[in-house]
Amino acid sequence: MFKVLRVYSDGGARGNPGPAAAAFLVLNENGEVIKAASNYIGIHTNNQTEYEALIAALEYAVNSKSQEVICHLDSELVTKQLRGEYKVKNPDLKKLFTKAQALIRQFKKVEFINVPRTNIQIQKADALVNKTLDQQAT
Image (tube, rainbow, N blue to C red):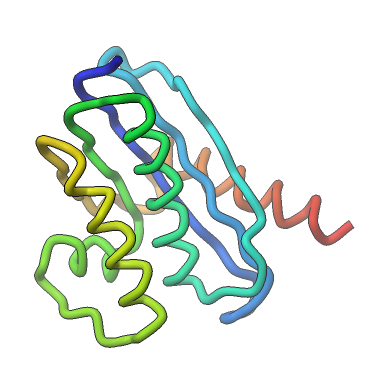
């Protein structure tokens, strides 16, 4: 069990909507990657993939019994929606938002940080997304 986990999630679609994948990295308190995962999720928009990636990471964190999660996302929209700064108007995103909220309630504390695409961990998650999409295309 880890008290605090750092999550770095990213999603991507080739086309918007288009073939899509979601990926995440989970780091422990020492900054060590304890989980890296990516999966093909079908035809989605970029915003949907960002939510799908975060949801997969939160599901992992719930199963690991961590108490706190610090989520790093490069999607300003998703970050601000989860912080309550933006309303979720799109019906498809609202479903994903609701799913994420149900997971969030299982932690003592959750923080959302918007990071640039140049963040090294986000770049690793993005590489996993692209690898998954490349494999799906062949």
